[in-house]
Image (cartoon, rainbow, N blue to C red; front, side, top):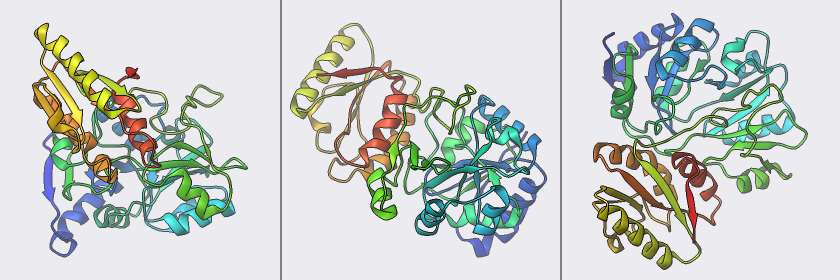
Length: 350
């Protein structure tokens, strides 16, 4: 299959391309597209065959639920049995934006989209290309991240091409994304809302807006049926090709010294070493490849660059990656959730 890469500079000049992309989705084909979080691999969310194509293209287990992307509340109403008051208030406030809600699904939502669960994950992306694609297709778009399952999520169209070239007919290139990590997933089917995946919208901001307690349950692996309640809860995610170890500690100077010592020992064994640093510490390391992921003082720079940095190390063919951690701030939950999974839970705390 030939994969067509379409640069979307502005919607006015790309009407024909967007119309073609919408028709592909409607017909059950796949289109990769940008959102504010990461690039998504989209298919018609009401066609079981489209969901099967998504799972096949990604190499994704079919019990890992997909998120349905919508462009208006009318579309949401058609996909769920009811919308609790807290959920509706959150959607009105945080949408369009990086928040996914879990609600009881309506009968028209295929079981293969939800992994067989009676709940469905829905979000309204904050990106003009994504919203226009949904409008053009006229259907909710089922879309996980547009990468090979387990790999770092794509934040640029070129990342999608690396993983899915020849597997899908079209990629819409909307440039680099803004947020850089997947949406916050919050389950509104319980009396107390539960965050199943941390993201740009933090627990603290959700509690402040709703005026009630919000639980965090990212350690939840599966439902009572052994099926993950939300995307990314059961399987390995975000991993670079090289082995990765997180080095954590309260004293950043000691963390730097420890990473340098580990890198020295590995280099003596003939291994090529990479280090994920921050802007504040990148000049303190001795290794083959040192890349800053962003500023500790501005953690939004870390979310924006994390997956890009993980993929960059793949191109540098390092044997081992040591990484600093980012703890202590509300947005740290989202960052560390991804970094821990990328490292396969290999953590050294000093």
